[in-house]
Amino acid sequence: MRCRLDKALWGLLLLVLLAFAPAPPAKITVYLIGDSTMSIKERRYYPETGWGMPFTVFFDETVTVDNRAQNGRSTKSFIAENRWQPVADALKPGDYVLIQFGRNDEVPTKRSYTPEADYKANLVRFITETRAKKATPVLLTPVARRKFDAAGKVEGTHTVYSGIVRTVAQEQGVPLIDLDQTSQALLQEFGVDNSKLLFNQLAPGEHPNYPAGRDDNTHFSELGARKMAQLVLADIRRLKLELADRIVRQEVKKTVDPQAR
Image (cartoon, rainbow, N blue to C red; front, side, top):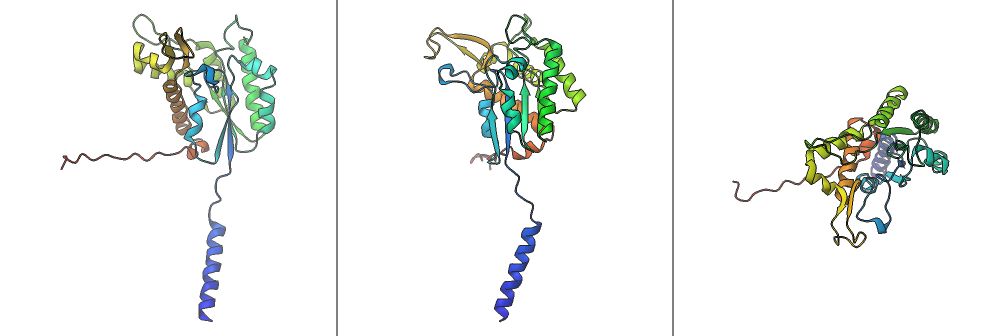
């Protein structure tokens, strides 16, 4: 009789503990909307890699990264081609939308060109419609191109449109990842020559997809894409977004020198 009573008490205690245990985090989706520097590449374009590709592997099983970025798209063309509406319709509370446009919006000679006022209005639309679904919008300035002056100093190429993103983020109270600024700093750290390793720079005959070689200062190599993804992840942590708690933490194993006694 005593044994049965003890088991019942332990069972009751377990139920009480479970009732007060924190619920596991809900599964969420992180949508990436933007241009070619973020997008998933077809096999025929490798080793060109969008930073959204390695970005997916840095999260735990509660996060699904849905990369909707497309080559050559601006805010205008992304909306006009009905690429935004399916994202807005699918959003649920707790989701995130990382928004990175500008490099195609800012070029007047491209069909994707978006005047400054329209660019700002489109960003505000993304923010408003994301918040309407109780999801979190995050603005990113366009990532830097590889461009150095004669003295070896990185030159910005998105000054106006990056400025618009910063202004919208401030006015709307939206988390900002200033990828233009941080990627310029990374390029400066690598320097004029070594920064080529971050981009799809190939000598003739080096890769079967580019038999004539490639001199691309816009799109990333696999290394460059991973470095850019890490810049984004670092800012997600800096901003203290709830999403940061879902980044996989790697254990760093210390090696011991057997002679160091």
